[in-house]
Amino acid sequence: MTKPKLAVWKFSSCDGCQLTLLDCEDELLDIAGAIDIAHFLEATSEIKGGPYDISLVEGSITTPHDRERIQEIRKNSKVLITIGACATAGGIQSLRNFADVEAFTSAVYAHPEYISTLAKSDAIADHVQVDFELRGCPVSKHQLLELITATLAGRIPRVPKVSQCVECKLSGTVCVMVAHGTPCLGPVTQAGCGNLCPSHGRGCYGCFGPKENPNPPALSAHLADLGMAPKQVRDFYRSFNAGAPAFAEESKSHE
Amino acid sequence: MPDAKGASFLLDSPGPLVDALRRQGWRVIGPKLGQGAIVYEEIESAADLPRGLTDEQEGGHYRLREGDPDRWFDYVVGPQNWKKWLFPARQKLWSAERSKDGFSVESHEDEWPKTAIFGARACEIAAIEVQDRVFDNGDFADSGYTKRRAGMLIVAVQCARSAATCFCASMNTGPRAEAGFDVALTELETGGFLVECGSDAGAAVLDGLELADASAAQQQAGEAVSHKAAAEQTRTMPANVESVLRDNLDHPRWEEVAERCLSCANCTLACPTCFCSDVEEVNDLSGDHAERWRVWDSCFSLDFSYIHGGAVRRSTLSRYRQWMTHKLSSWHDQFGTSGCVGCGRCIAWCPVGIDITEEAGAIAAEPLAQEV
Ligand code: SF4
Ligand code: SF4
Ligand code: SF4
Ligand code: SF4
Image 1 (cartoon, rainbow over the protein chains, first blue to last red):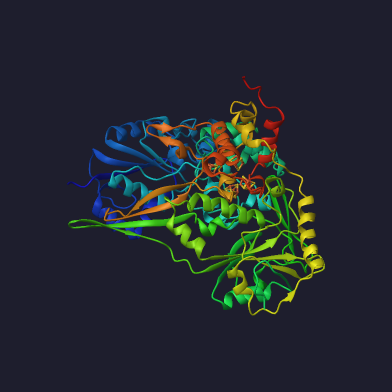
Image 2: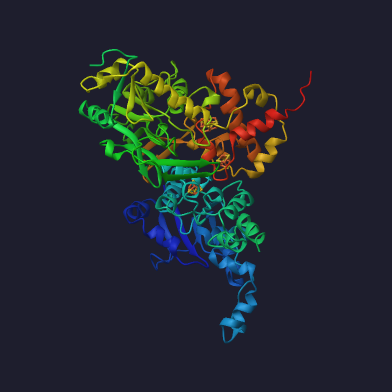
């Protein structure tokens, strides 16, 4: 059996999700043994041409060039998997979606006419068909390995779309919102980080984006009861997953 | 020497009892201060108990407060419950190894040292008995659960106060535990404890402690503590909830509560009787080593109702209705008892304070007209 050919691609992003892949040091040798890493600039300058069996895509679409490049990658990939908040929701740079990008470029650059950028930062799935989305800012090492392992074993990866609250309860973490009145996005956020913030006494920042069937208006009403001003509620939803539709819509209703 | 089960004695403090348990080889799990709440962890002596603390609870709200520094048990039930130990959140079931000529399977069961749970409240004992019907059910008994349950001793604490979220009196599960314990302690208003012996195993633990016999008046004082706690309860469950929910599956209230519900699953996971789990496959990259793990699940998750091709309960309405009708109505058909013991956890630990008694009450107050 020939080894499946893997490519890793970068769009607008901080490289943190690719680093998560490199951080799988102990497992990388096994991964390298099981798959043919054909394109992964963060790890090796050796480049093999397509087609690829699996493409992992990091980053969001923010330029006209990105928009064309992703079409090429899609054509050359059997399975296309997006990794991280940028690729799945537009990332922190999707804050531009709520502002005037031209005003930014003229304020920041001496020659804004050289800047070629789109008005919005888009998720990859806004442009091409995506086979699987791995959430997180950054993605969790555990889920990334599960994704690769399950894909190689031919089974569906176990990446539950339940709330972060489920991770709290499974880990025995006392709810910071109920016990301390700390604002938390956990009830509308997808699990996966390993219960990072609540297990350290902090509210969830929503790194893994909206859970399935989320109800942000009901949470926002409670956040207001906890003392958050409308602007704070708006900004709470506007971080790494600001562009995810459920969060974007909710933040706009607190303008 | 206390020789008779059913007898009552007096004890100054819980300390000697914890020490006696440990001397006799019991691992003791009890209430402890942790993460700003009362959690259930192993304790080494009575010094680990959260003495002097009390709690304030409401829908979506829990705070620990300084109380009378001399009182030992003036807090009531907190975020965790004993199912954390009896029915662990994550549990390895078996593993398998691929070999040249096939594969081999090895079953797995975690060790369970004989364990005393210290400070179980009446509603919590009732909840354990509810889960017994689920897991210790004859033909399909869960061997891990029954093993843990058999190697377990229950030291109850009779509640001296109720939180605003408690409604055990209306579920007939408390606040006084009449049975189901090996030893029960009542902290008397005058200080000191009334000690009830509930079993031979309890008598064996009490053996060797210097205990004075309790007078009839002292026993009455113990019961008065429970009466006072019961009288403090304000929430109640409608008596006809089982039939009223069954007859009102299309009640408009379900839609109304679904607008407030986050489908976050906290209620089911905090509930001491909910027993649902999922089984997950874990394998290594090579595929040569695989494991199966049992993990808590909830009817609030989408995948819970996944059957070939899709999930059946997609809306929050259908998930909330499943939770409440199962707990309060169809549980009776399934297990011959209610699935709710009135502990109030689902009320306090719901981030937005949805109140099962209020929701049931709203439907019971204005049921849909029944066709005849
Ligand atoms: S701390 Fe946040 S994520 Fe955890 S249970 Fe509470 S609301 Fe949910
Ligand atoms: S349904 Fe609520 S009140 Fe009833 S036993 Fe469960 S958590 Fe306690
Ligand atoms: S209420 Fe839901 S989670 Fe609880 S036992 Fe019933 S189906 Fe399971
Ligand atoms: S009732 Fe409360 S705890 Fe339960 S799923 Fe709804 S919001 Fe979460």
